[in-house]
Length: 108
Length: 116
Image 1 (cartoon, rainbow over the protein chains, first blue to last red):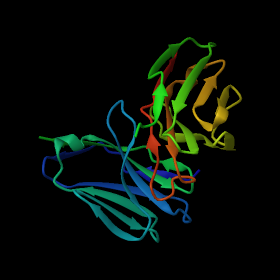
Image 2: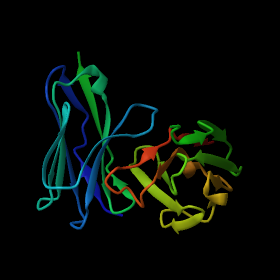
Image 3: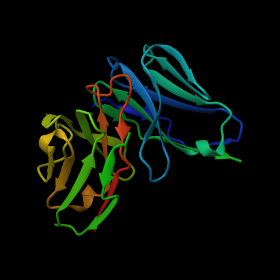
């Protein structure tokens, strides 16, 4: 399985700020990239997927992919307390390889 | 549409006992996956079914783990005999397309297994 590394965190941001999450992966041939959000004791929930270089925006979330640098990021704009969770980066051929996750806390 | 259902949600067993976890995928999803998260570690792939066939079981830790998917519907994951290091959260996921494709998986809520 591919190695996926995330900034370890925890990351604490004030409400309304931008939370920036980073992820690198080792397999240059990886094609699909995902960000999952996991609340404590709950299942991972898919929030973004990206497979082309560049940015992809969905509401307050923006995923960025740079295949040359083997780098994926997630920006959360206007962070809300409800965004407090662990964010998992995952890379896929057909099975997912996950990073260890970054725990985000949004301070009200 | 019902999601991926797993039960039990929690199980506490003694070392040496047997436990069977069950996963009901989303109806019509031929692909079913088992993953596991051990405390402090990342979520790891265990195995993948396509219908009733095991497509990839490269992540199964050892022969104490046995997965089945009779009739290509629900799946069971049996641990026999359970060891302390088997403790963790076992997730099931399903998808229509082979692998994650561009759409990702739908995960069940997981079974938290504690071996004491």
